[in-house]
Image: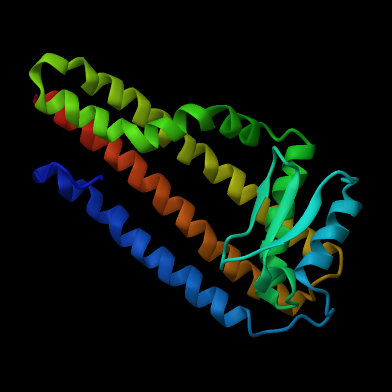
Length: 228
């Protein structure tokens, strides 16, 4: 939806598009590579996640297996840490890295990590903005009697962009927590940490590209609004 109308401002999105393509390639190739390397400790992603939760005094979060690939996430409302089968049952460096990362979100939630709280507060309006903000803007752009909708669309989309920006420190912090706990807890040897780190760094690129796309799209809307 970000590619209409087709005008000169479309070029603003090219860097974000290229970064997004590279990020998808990076996460899939890195995950595929390090999924084949087994950890010396032999624990699965599910076992590591459960152990890390206990070590951090978190007893009210369940670890569940779900389908899909790279579908792993922490549901703060249900207090469930959901790991894809390839992470839940595997003892690869990639699996341990992903499991620890998602556990990092549970730890953030338990510790009331400020950026996570801000992201959760933004989610309702950001969800509306990411789905409808651009279309509302277009209605205002093409129907003269509804010009005010351009500003409404911009405000809604700005909330979505802010959500993506706040997501960055949340994800980076979860990864740093994950790597520290995997290393300090002896779940990964010193020579294994690099593999998990590469997977998490590649995953981080997807969040950076999403934030870049949102911010550049917002800039584009502001330019189109100014030219109107």
